Length: 232
Image (tube, rainbow, N blue to C red; front, side, top):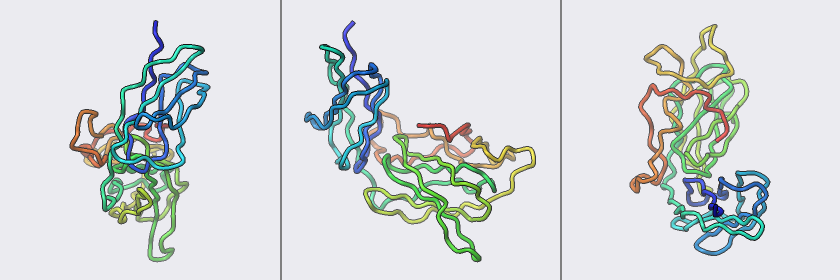
């Protein structure tokens, strides 16, 4: 059986500085090609590998990978074209209500490779950062900010070195006594559950959709986001 090419992780966005690949034979040498030129050649110890680039990708570039095991080299993978990002940078999407004392913050609607920083603000303490996270290829980020006990909470996205406006404020609501605090499971507010996010991480542009390069679509409110803090 011939050696198959790895898969390049979709989507890729302008200014992103990492490329994911999987479907790799452990121990293979994996070559990253950008516009046909070799950008990196690294040995992967496992079936998944991340190339960390020294500079950001440019919109319109074609990204492919191939692997070599012993003397056999695979064909190049199907290309992934780097998408452009929207300016001005749109603010991240947060749920309108967050559980007080929750240990998970989720935001979506951002370009892959962006950074999102969460803040809390009130009249007594002023604005203070809760933490930041990297946006994955699906356009969302989820991270543990620690113990959130005051609000409201808002986020700012940073893409290509440019900050977005602040997102609308999300207000904290008390969790019911039986609800585990360290959770990311969500349901609709209309179903009397408290929301971490009203958007699903699976709600993203389809691979065949040319009209949505900015990863800013949202799902219908009320979708479930079970264990949203899992990796990737």
